[in-house]
Length: 476
Image (tube, rainbow, N blue to C red; front, top):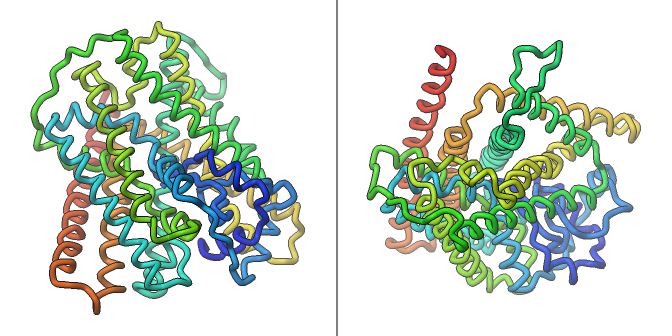
């Protein structure tokens, strides 16, 4: 699915690429993590695959994109070093910024070594993806690497994990929407005759999701890209708000952070790895570069910047609010401040900017699978209806399991460890087995085992936490 979309998108013209490359747009794996799931117009290589594009495609729709899927790819690689760094940083900043302080407070300050260590490992595995692409010049996507390494089963497995990450990230976004709406409208009472069992916050979340539903019917790629850029702007506002409170000492930075809570490491490892979940789009970024040999430097600069940002934000939030820090830093900020209200609204708006962008690949897949005898209008109706139905399922799950930290931890443990560490290491070992030195083989096998171990432990821990919370709430 992914390679067909990418090849077809690559054929679209990008007359404004040079000026618009300076605007970073986020990806979700937001998560893309996903926060993180958006990408710039890097030769339009990934306009649809959860990355968005700032190019002018007003004359193109998803139908025309799909019909050109079999045309040979001649995408121009025109992304400079600076553009690539901006794009990669934009991909990596997402939901992780909300949960990093909570994770550090619960894991202890020594767990910061895990936060930094996972960042270094993810930077290394991003380089492994680049090496895999060097071995197979025709590969252009994460799924292509899976096929090159393990055949059709590898492609299916990679695509499955990508789809699963998108779905679970959207559930986390919707939970975040619910929690922040509950805080924004604290004290407000809302009741509807047919929905008497739903709380005010649940009704508000339902309204928010319904407001976002029309965006799933968009076929104009430039409109979807606009939503993507809005998501990045909201992330910047959130980070700036926390920094403002710390710099101007609105809240005293005087809480002590425990040294280490070893028993909580499996759960918070899922939150930490989600901070760096952008690997599904790194192959697109690599292929978009004018000089792919600089991809190593791009990864080093980007990950160093993001590691520094997440670590500083984690320590700042933990020192500001201590044991009372929420799983989402915006919920801990003093509610009487205007800057807090801005941050809360930014967190509310963020999920609503993500739905259309992250559903775009599903939309293209659905439209491509429909018979050619169907009219364009019929395909649009079917695609929009299916997307709306899936979004309602996500809403139901989010309202049924409203535990942001546990769901995000499960997403990181179950999916992100596989996408960011296990799959890149396994693919590299498989593709380059004949040329690997003994040290390199041992290193990658060790990282693979490490990713599997933390992934399994984190999945078990976060799943137990979800079931415990459900049981507790049911009993109450």
